[in-house]
Picture (cartoon, rainbow, N blue to C red):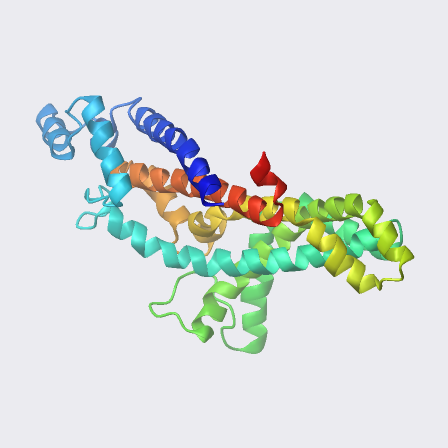
Length: 319
């Protein structure tokens, strides 16, 4: 197992180094210093800022230094958009707000979607299945932004007005997070995320479970008199773990990256919102640090997916 893990890590190191190279090249297609300073600044201002950031060095030197910063996670360059704060500090401040939204949303949507997919596949072609499929298609067909607007209007303004006090907050993030403040500021965006994600996940898990339901081991289990619950939650679910793991692991990087739309419209200072603001402000050090971290998360997720495959299905290690 450990040899398999080491091999997967070694395979992905050149991939990540290539991604970092592409990130640096993409951010330098236009001079980032002029993009930040604007046309009204002088050449002297440009040269001073360029020298301060080390952008006047050879590209190979910048690349080696940037790889060193990534390895040590020391993004100590000062933010252009928020003077006095480094990219590392902004990165650390944004992780928790993203996690408190995306982690509960992923957990709830995955559990509910898997159960709904099992039930829908078991009653395939009958009324429960048709109703669940219609609801899933509706969830997929309506824009994420529409759910946000409706959720803010009905879940916050209307409900708060009828109750007489604030149950859900439309914007902002508490200074100290407690169960009560989490419910007020985070429950509504989490609920919206779950509703939207369930539409896509339910269709996927239903297709997986329908395919598993045609296997010979399911027919054998039914012939032996196994109960419906045992067939669904033991036999079928266990053998469908590979596509389930794939689906869940694909969404894992968004636990840190966060949901950009939710963070922007609810004023949550997560990583997605911070990256969008950095792009708007031409905040070169923050953009470079955040994109490197996001790329690293995707690589780590791929490695974890391979490891989980090997744990669930021993045949993976043989290949």
